[in-house]
Image 1 (cartoon, rainbow, N blue to C red):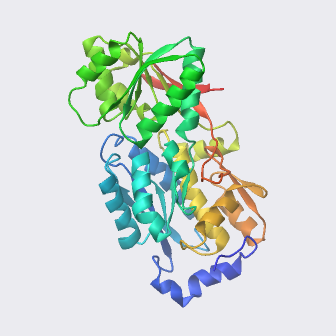
Image 2: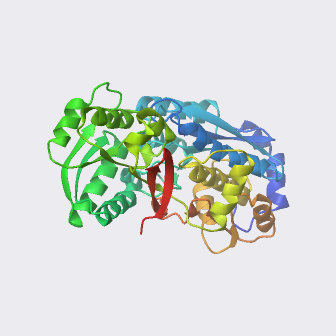
Image 3: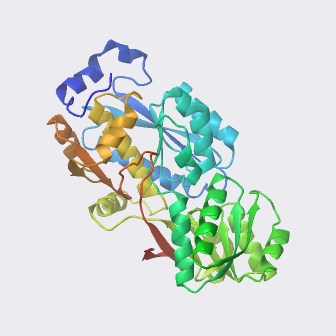
Length: 406
């Protein structure tokens, strides 16, 4: 049974602890498992621990304020997708759902992994996935039974924002190389369509495969177009880094642009700060306000460094917990409706870390509206959110946020 927004409080808590049928579910009386599905190996392996840290920060914040449903702990079970391996993503999701018994999944991070895990495991099993990093426009059109959500905007938006940014800087001719997967192709198509419609010229847009040792022939062909700026839509720990390094070594390019997959210190460490000075990067950001302020305070108190998508991972985990608290049971049943309820107006505004405030409001029969670290999370019919995109620049060996792209 799906409990309504007004079916809360002590009755719901009692049900969690007393219903004998719960003995056969995927959690014990004092804990529930939520999966974290991500590329712990592969081309984003240096980013993944920090993103997982954002999700676990939500768990620790909830635990410090009494836990879920009157004292239940949230256990995080992690699975590795290797980012670019659909088979491994499927296998890991299968283990999380059918062996570990998770009731929901934060993830995956890489878009192809999310699509594979959802289609092959989560959707058939009726398990909600909330991705904090999968940005491919393809996800919006999935037949997912309202089970796939994301706390990050689609690359349809990021591509348009990057196009506007480049043209505003007088960059009117670009060459594009993109990772040959759902993320890369979706981002490249969105960028090219927006850029050309605004008057820019895409001299070439070519896919690359991850994991190769030598990209010099592809780089040479892109350089032969005469474009002075190379847009690299790939991963900082994978081909994206190799392509930039080899483009510099060959003298083919010295001006680089990247998307969110390149927003990592590992890129600077691997290529060199001087060679990347002034590089333009975009990524989803957070609007100014209480949401990001409270999340930043929690992160700093925990001694954690900022990582791309850590805020969105916090939001994904916190939302899943709020949904379970709202519907009064730590189960997969009714999660989509509960997610939509706790993330949208009307209701008492809840920010990152406001767990006790949310629990009290729900117990009193009030509606709540979570305004997260990544901004408002009002899911549309496709499980997407609006969000915003920020410009980042490499300056003196650091990734420096310049501001929102208007």
